[in-house]
Length: 115
Image (tube, rainbow, N blue to C red; front, side, top):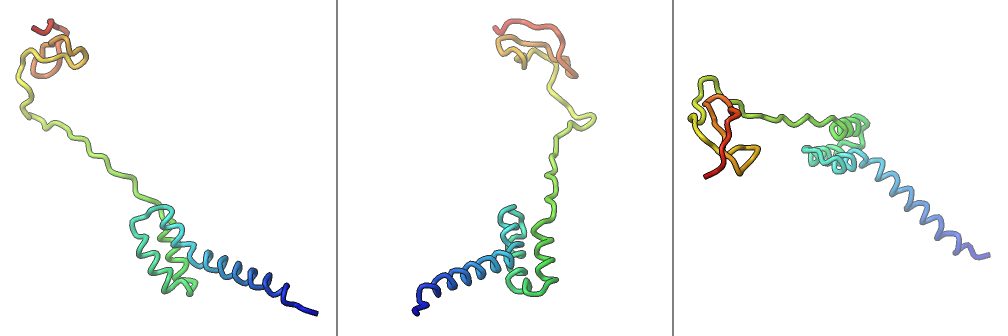
């Protein structure tokens, strides 16, 4: 009997197992690149060289899965005592076809048409 037809299927199974094991080994790196974390290069190097140790693999997985810090939004606030626009007629922010009186601290209800 010729067993040459059945050996091709065994090679595929071995190749599939190698692929699955490599995917499991590089899971931390895959997660890091998928999440776009800033330290993905560090995760890759740690996973590549120390991933064979359980501790190295877990540390690289923890680095890849850590939460991202929320971005800090800074809003400029006027300083107390800072000089603002001088009192006068300015374009109305809510109606560009009119002018509105700025008293130095806030908008008044007095309006006039733009001349």
